[in-house]
Length: 516
Image (cartoon, rainbow, N blue to C red):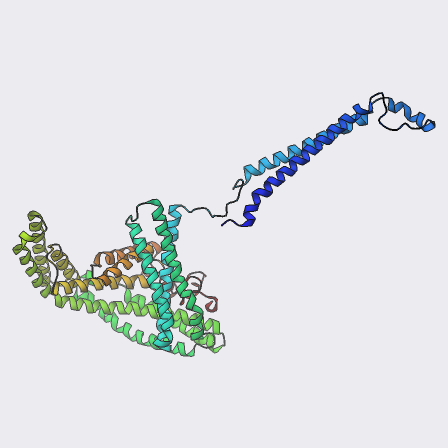
């Protein structure tokens, strides 16, 4: 809807033009009057009363016999002045029309962004909303531990609502990446939908941020919250020492590819804990000196470091458990795969595949199972990769996956999704929208019972590419607490010292001032 202010501009512009024209015409008329006046006074009859004869009259008499120079000069000056004013007004209007960026009427509607700009806005909105959800989830885990599930339920409800909106936004974006819809106008509307869903996710979190602050009351005192964070820190420090031995065992017991997903995780966990240690100490010092705001800020940064150290340590522990389970499943999966191959040979006539295609797939499955058996006897191998290959080879036979082969496929899927989730969580300061969207797709597939392995692996690959492009502070083998915290999205990198810590909330509140 156009405002009255904007609607009124063209009318005033036209009114100004009419006034200037009227001034010019009036000046011309005045000048013409001055020109006509001498002619009127040059006739035989006096147009004015006759002055009585006398000395004064006789002195003035010579001037009344003809037209004076002043009478002729004044009209010419008036006409010239009127013409100059009219010309100046015309030139001024012409120059203004040429130089202003929006000629004539100023539109109330903002310029329509280009498709490239709209895509950029959608990507940024997805990353921001995902970061807000992840940061909110991290802080809420500490609040839950201190106040209990019932007190935290309103904030958990807001987080679930934000997660739902974000999941829908990622689904729209993923279809957009695949070329759906195809119409240009509909594609633009799809991007608008992505931005709108992300904004709603942020609004849900922003709406509860102030209430969560009141519940925590960090500015009044961080004592109880510090105790929770320090207790979790001590528990993680003990687990990290044990996980270091676990990671070394993975590299000794299995092929290099088996432990590759958690390479460097122990070092990064130690780095996060070192960062958390310094932040916890500074928080306690600030609390002792009465600086509640600084104490709250340092506590939140420490909580973020502890939470991400937990993700890193948990990632190593989970992968070790998955590899042990996979190693137990491989022999049974081989037996189940051979049964499915025999079924495909026996029921080949009822297959939807052409005879030649079915024969080729059976031969491929036979080769995969033979290769896995060779790996089992040859030495260290990757059990999860072996299960992945068995499950895929059997799936291509289109005879269904059941029993142990299906269990193997589920284990592989959970491992792939969990690994991608962990990596993105602790590197979110560098990971872009594409990797996050593929992870969201994998999570949807896992929930619906379809195979999430491909999108999960794509998500991990894209995320690693983003981190390489961003610059990995661990690439040279040295840990840097501040850089690691920024890479992990714990600090928002708005200031030279890494910026404020992220906290529960959407775009308007996740770095709110009471933590600055």
